[in-house]
Image 1: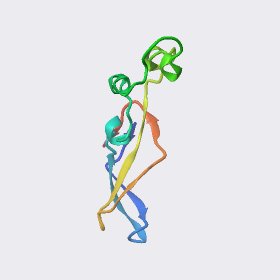
Image 2 (image 1 turned 90 degrees about the horizontal axis):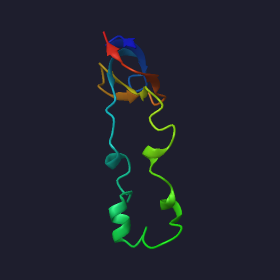
Image 3 (image 1 turned 135 degrees about the vertical axis):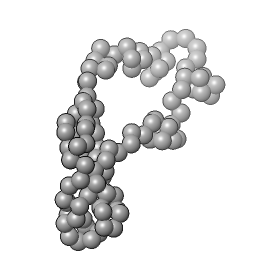
Length: 105
């Protein structure tokens, strides 16, 4: 997907249409996304979960990597950052667009 490096958009802070610089929003890792999650098996076992015999509840399910359609999608949704050239405020396009590759021209 080819996009221009700069585009004219309405800036809600300036209250007028100004030139905006277009960049890709950085992808955040799991630790930044869910800082309070306790996902690892090692931690769960040390806290007493996933031990013993029989049905282990949610831990009886196979790993996500073993699911049939894991990794089926070949493109990711990309989010754009629009930075106003006048007030330097940045606005994200929260509705991501699915694209394999994004090139700014």
